[in-house]
Length: 305
Length: 263
Ligand SMILES: Nc1ncnc2c1ncn2[C@@H]1O[C@H](COP(=O)(O)OP(=O)(O)O)[C@@H](O)[C@H]1O
Ligand SMILES: [Mg+2]
Image (cartoon, rainbow over all chains, first blue to last red; front, side, top):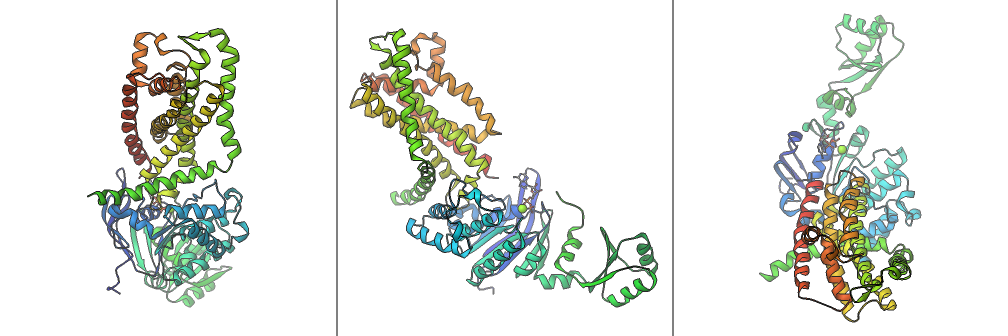
């Protein structure tokens, strides 16, 4: 592994907006060929980090190397090999789906013929063949997102950076994008993505970090993060004063999550037994811990704007 | 040494040309309308002047009013076309369509986007100038072949007005704020900079102000020398003013855009 240089290397990477540290001394390394995720609540600093890696936002401090080069000095060369799916859809509304890809390929100095044939292939790849000549405003949200993915591939990038690629999409559209990302990965391209859909991260990412308030809280493989951060399983039941009192009387630590009470335990049978025996509850569920539990444990339940 | 400069200039030129080409393709989406307007506008204006106002005014110096006014049709059209394109239209591309964001995620830099926009704004000016020139030729209101010089002058003035417009676009908090330069800067120039009547009719201090600060003054002086085939040595002063202002406003536009968009 160490013989292959990392695709992105960040050391104490920092971004200030005025005096506010949106990204605060973060360190991470993305290896060639992996899918690397950034999870975090709104305002965690994910987009800011992506924009620095995309060479569109200058960093305030620290070290950053993308494809072995410093974005501060080699932005043009780096951008040739990077594909970007921005958080905000910015397709060109003056053109059709196909024209969007062809025009975009020109920005990479791809000859027109070559651009046209790549556009053709990519439109097929994201299943927009029937909509190829449709103006952008007539495409649905899911179609636009798929088209942006196609656009990000027009320069055959070594590194693909996606900022919330499936935001606001229905399950069908999300599955299609996931499927396409898997085949892009199978081609050996490196993928970096942000999301706050935890199932998306768990399915797609080889490794991920959870960010909050500009800092990285944990890093690892999704499975091992769950095992490391949460001991045992989760027992859930309804949240009533009686249940609270009952759990307290048994000395079982618990957490309140809105309508439900959660108990993290290595011995779910004992907790369930105690609840059923002496707490007069209607329903109790035992389940395995998920990435979502890790996420909420680390970033809290307070609502973010 | 030369090779190094060239190697650095090639990608910049390419980037600018891609941005320009994107706007050109949008323009060609509606060629009939987009080329009809630059022809119709001057025909209507000249008809109103020729049949109407011109009949009352008679001669300006030793030329007919129509002949006096004809170069103003070109000068003001170039100003309006280039300024509009790089103010309202660029603002829409920058703010509402996020076109600049999309392009700067590719190897094309923000500087190249700005220069491509300015060159495109100037191109709109040149398209207008060329169409109007055809109308003037048919109406016998311009001296040929000297009047062909209108085209390079339209390019230079177009670049200047577009560069000034880009500066306002970069600092405007919203699209409505662009009405300020439109009504406080462009419209007064349209009325007073030697367009409808000779600059010399204005009080001396106003003339001095117009000479010092208003680009259309210089554009109009040169336009008139060209279409009337009567150059004077002052042409060099006007040309120097326009080139100097252009050299000033292009980097300023770049700077202001970078300040706004690179965060
Ligand atoms: N251009 C900006 N100017 C000032 N503050 C910003 C700017 N962009 C982002 N921020 C702030 O930086 C923080 C991180 O934002 P962002 O990276 O967009 O978070 P995320 O993508 O994780 O939701 C937020 O508090 C946000 O308000
Ligand atoms: Mg974000």
